[in-house]
Length: 337
Image (tube, rainbow, N blue to C red; front, side, top):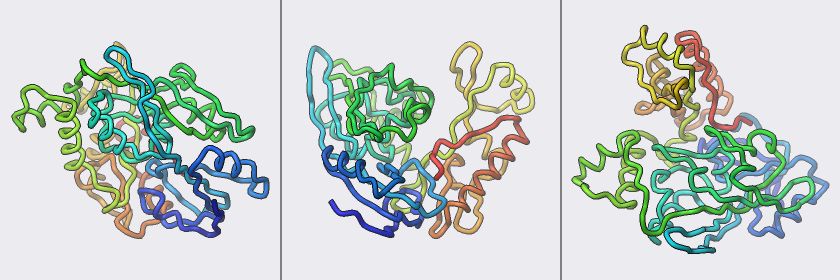
């Protein structure tokens, strides 16, 4: 393993922001990870996975450690379930396709989400009515300070909406090295009631959908709505969808009868941030090379040479306008560095 200097991180973040890491190393084994973490001559270290959930706004005066731990295997099978262990460096969508190829269900609604497996629990990624926590058993992570390998259960991870222990109390303290999932092998629980999955299946004349059909439907929907990061720099949904009290929602509904919503509980309503951003007039707008995608207002994009600071400035304008118009604060889903 070689430690390089002054390495551009443009190929390592899906926004395509061209900032430099003072030092850079890629680890492909647990032993390499332990060795690099123990190197005292690099006092500041930063862990980089798939680079799909971050906005880089400046050069990093640090050792950036790219996680390249690869491998996936079935570790247990019983009745209608299989337990799968996946290393942190694996590409998330490739994992989903692998599970489908082996007729293992559970992750199909999470198809085409960018990023790596190791980053997924940090964010508790979710889409179309499914979250990572729904099929999570445990993960293994190395404590940065001691290099001790620790196992975190579902309860330990304290998952919430795009939240986890690793984004809160454990932030910057651990490196996730592998994740274990519980997936179905026969009687798959199909989730087609969220978003336009049902409509997509109907349009394709799919009357008895399989997990592969659902994955294809999700891929088609995402490809229509979301830009490919390889073509147009982006990090997927930039903002979280806010959850408000039912009383606040009723107040807004009087002013905006068409406001969409999803009931979370008896007293909590989720309001799509994309709808509010679109209503504020930002959808399809552009400031230099920083912009809001023309088909999905929740996605901020880099049209070529935008800096992270320019994209962040646009995000702040959006937050201010949404707060002014709706009295709701929307918060970034991406990590800003």
